[in-house]
Image (tube, rainbow, N blue to C red; front, side, top):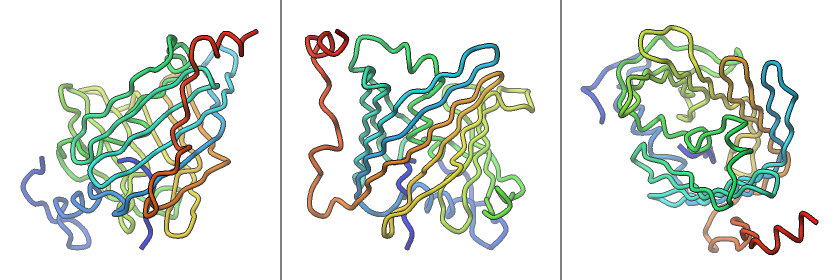
Length: 242
């Protein structure tokens, strides 16, 4: 069975195309990849904003997925370090800065929820007509309510493989999304699949992340020691800047 290395209230049962209720479908999606695993993903982030100069940064994303929790580390340009956490089964996710500045992250529009894909845990409102993304992947389309907000999210979830591919975020009363997240390309190693390209965009800006050096695996023999990189001390950072 294929497993995807993307970190990802149920209302009354709703029967949809294919005979599987929305309840049952979301239960499969929220169950995750069904295995404890890790990934080390290195690549490039490109950010473009209307009227501004393009920004290109090296990015590292390390992930450990347990049966009940996902832990991650995000590093931008070897300068900004962030700890990430997602308890599987709840929409609450966190991103904690470990360095003094968050200037790079603030400027490129990336959120913890983009990498942890926590919208699948939001309360579902209704199922919309299915769509096929990129002309090849049939998706079930579900509208979710954003907790503690009047916003909503329309999620596109692969019907056969039960993983999220696209999320469109809308303000109440508006029909044009103010934020779009999409997994555009995937790679594989054995039975583990991972995103090779992610895009996030909003009015006047777009960020693309390409992971070109990826190591993924199962945790059968324990956690590899280099998934999470050490955060440099202030003295080390001062030496690096000289």
